Length: 298
Figure (cartoon, helix red, strand yellow):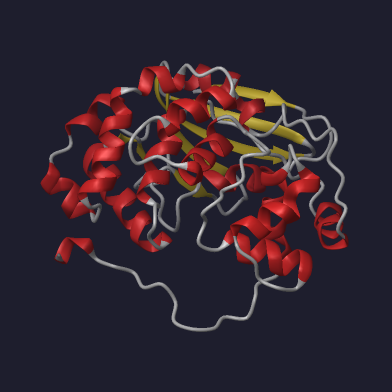
């Protein structure tokens, strides 16, 4: 086991910082202990690792196991948002200002691991979350490896990049991912080295969107998590535009309307989207909800 203690500047909410990396209930890479600590697995450049993060009296305590332990602890401040630059951001709407007051420890962190964010993002394309998360659990259960150290039971580490290129079509089918999403992930895995080496969010956006099957929404979802981009707004999200419109105006809107509302927050549009989620404001539900498919039965 390796350990690191780090005292952040200002308040920090570890749960909020790490929540974006949780992919639904039962995510094999993410657990929260009864004591409030968060367990997370990752495949670092040095190999797999298990990371446990807790906070006591304002001090962050990181513990890590596995070949990637030292890398994970070195990257711990970045993961928790130590380099999240909020300069220039002012919550101009009272609803947003209230959320900021209630959540002073909100920070946007970065993992530095592109494929770990890309695979589940592609699985979530144009489907409900439950369908995507079911596929994520199945794939990690079949192709991931057990988490190093004393991780909670059932935790897994995402497979190596080469594995994503080798998964047979019938296993994608058993996971519940149709051929389009499977091809998108496998093709991205062939370009993983270049994607992981992207130095800026603009460069990563360009590289991602040059790949078949990856558009504005998927690129934003990846850059939010891998590089902590506070401006990568998820245009095309099934819910986001409606939520932003309702929270800021009391009326639902579409993507162009959302972008107009977010224009005053250029540079921090994703940050505003996170704040909108935290308001808890939701438009009244009307009409049927999008259903969960089971592609395995097709």
